[in-house]
Amino acid sequence: MNALLDFTNHAKTMMHERLIQEDWVYNTVNDPDMTEEKRDDEKHYLKEIPPNGGKFLRVIINPSVSPPRVITAFFDRRVQQ
Image 1 (spheres, rainbow, N blue to C red):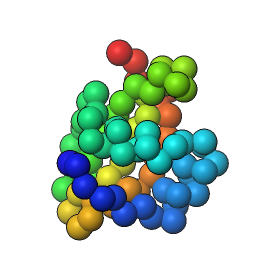
Image 2 (cartoon, rainbow, N blue to C red):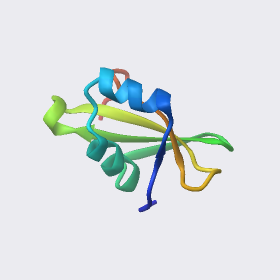
Image 3 (cartoon, helix red, strand yellow):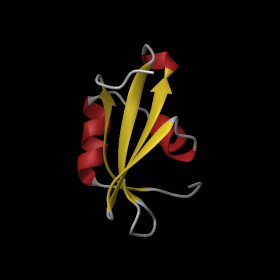
Image 4 (tube, rainbow, N blue to C red):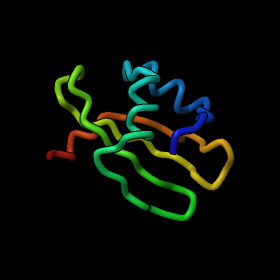
């Protein structure tokens, strides 16, 4: 997926509160380390973010709309590689 993304207000707020950079979200979606299909309207993209101590960023997308909609993003402490 190398396209524009639509960010929900919730996603924008959470990114701001969690100090998640927009380019990290785009990098995670465009070049993920892992993906998880959760439901028809929800796909999770995960990528290690070295500038943030190597934590994994989880970006949850609704891919069934155009452009794909970012629902939320957070650093997932449970994911290890």
